[in-house]
Length: 362
Ligand code: ADP
Image 1 (cartoon, rainbow, N blue to C red):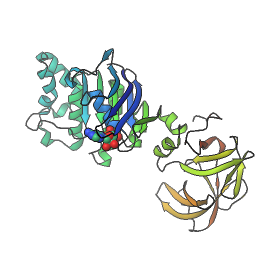
Image 2: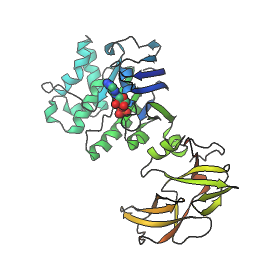
Image 3: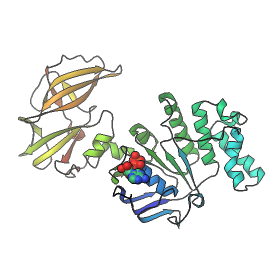
Image 4: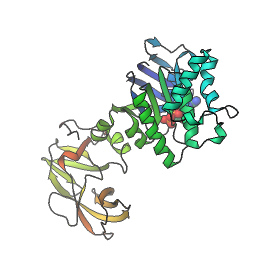
């Protein structure tokens, strides 16, 4: 196992697309790091550069103490699992797992030991005699992971490995991955666009957009202290509500309404509150954000209320996570409470979090 480092790595494609721009990231030995962001943000490019399947335009990539820029994929001592994993259909699970080790001329007894150990870890030890065609999707995926793990690589690279599985299986394999990493903490870099996978699996997340890092942090830091409006809106479902506002003489104004006193400097600001933190009141009183119900979506365990807030000449939609049974007519006025410790302020121009006040970590 080893530390992995990207130092000022840029990948520019012919035609001018900058897929990765001045990328700096250190993944600690044994850490499970998630690269997360929307499609096209450069996360696969980062992984392909680390794997040696592509070359950086500039910058340095290190695995352990070795700078690997000049090394072929096979010489990097890493293992990869892609979404389209390919098993050898005519070989048993045992031979699929053993294949890479045999190619490397590993002694027979050692192959046997490692295959059985890995199969036990992945709970596929009863399936070693079967062919891939006789396995379920989840079992095949575990064999694919086993093939990568059996080599005990320095680092484990995973590119959306769960995206071809149905929702139930995805949850199950996600749990397997978490357990596996606890038992065998190989340095792992995991690419996904799925924020639930990112939050549940990662020791730390690297949130990316447009080839650049937006924020690196633990799931708790990313969720509770987003560095900017991009991170705030990307992580969380439904996303954080973002409302254009202005602070005048210490009072937050949204549209024509003076809402509440706030402890952030005067000026234009984007206010952020997560749906689960907005407090819904059936009438509007001072100190609340005035809104009007647009529609209500009952989801069993809770209700999502979408409301409209006047922000001057326009309206903006906000979503409120309300208790099950909440029933509101479209069009009625409501008031929304914004708890100070769960209200975020972002610079109106740059979208960066205002750091005038420490956020309360939960
Ligand atoms: P992600 O994995 O986050 O979806 P990628 O790393 O695959 O994003 O791509 C990042 C950007 O680089 C995208 O704009 C993509 O279109 C571009 N890109 C990726 N591969 C190539 C290529 N071979 N040639 C040109 N542009 C590419």
